[in-house]
Amino acid sequence: MADTDTDTATITAVRTQARELFGRLLELLETGDIEAWVDLFHEDGVLEFPFPPPGWGTTIKGHEALLGHMKNFPEQLDVRFSDVVFHETTDPELLVAEFTGTGTARATGRPFHQSYVSLIWIKDGKVSRFKDFWNPLVTVEALGGLEAIARIVDN
Image (tube, rainbow, N blue to C red):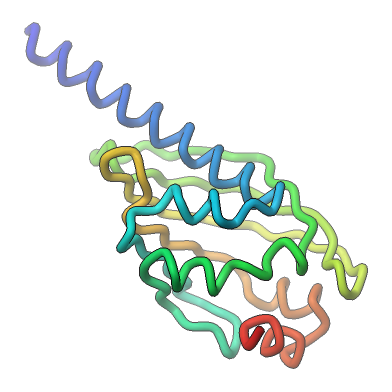
């Protein structure tokens, strides 16, 4: 029975650490500290967008690529995240989160309201894989159309 208690305590600790890490990821996006955000990923960490806007890749791997992809985020969107709901899985290193992003596109002044579902795999206290599901049409509309999305990625 003691092993079961130890296993449960370990699983609880891993889940707690994963949730805290996820909260930190959202906080850093809100404050625009992209370098610190990237540092929460393993060196070969992966960010995936299964349904990206036109012109975006579906997979970004490694610190340099992550920084290159995300560096313009703070200049584009003023966003706050809320309504975070976690769903437990049988794998304590896999975090499933639903949440909302609300704010304004800086260039257009248009409102931004996005619903997300994210799958985040965490190993040794850092993100190894972050699979982000969201509606690209919301982002395209807020930022001013497909041409604006292309400029963001090209810069």
